[in-house]
Amino acid sequence: MADPAQALATQLANIEKKTGKSLAQLSAAIKKCGKDKHGEIRAWVVETYGLGNGDANTLTHHALKSDGASRAADAGADQVLDEIYAGKKSHLRPVHDKLMQEISKFGAFEIAPKKGYVSLRRKKQFAMLGPKTNERFELGLNLKDDIRDSRVKPVPPGGMCQYIVPLASADEIDAKLVGYIKWAYDAAG
Image 1 (cartoon, rainbow, N blue to C red):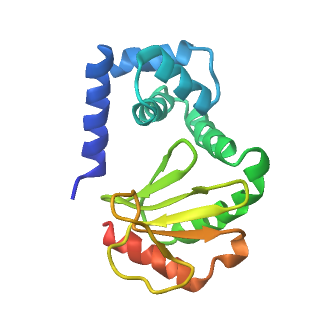
Image 2: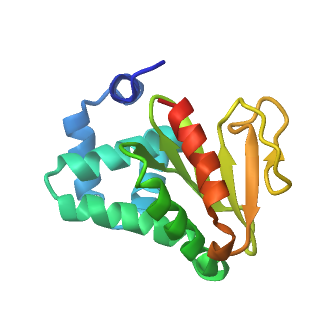
Image 3: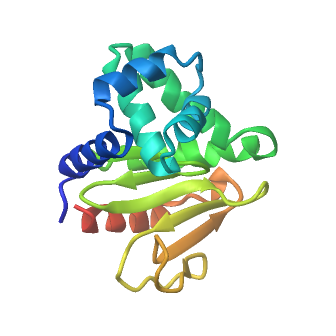
């Protein structure tokens, strides 16, 4: 399995090659870009350097952390979640929060906010959390084992997850569902 720290280092090195700038130069430019919200910074990076959303998101996280302003990094993560759960999707935030509360009991893992969802990783991704529509939250599970539960829907091969679990409220999160997430967590690590 790939080491997440090594994968991050490789991605950052590739960003330097793509842009022709060092991480220090990129971080300084981001600090001076006049944008405050994570999503605004990410969009600015995409437009300015022609990077894809994944690279721009990683660079934004790196720049917010490396400028020594942990407040900005924490605010950046909160801003990403605020963007994901904005407007008509705000009522789904408690589903996210309850899942994260349960998952945080498992042990160490990486949280990688993306555009529209949050990826959870150990050596590899084990879950994805986020609103699928204005009315439905979706939990994605990376688990090759067979799950037989009417709530857990298999996904055709080739997707980022093998299963999805549609959720409408935090009340639907029970010990059995948390057990499936723990199963995926253990398999990822």
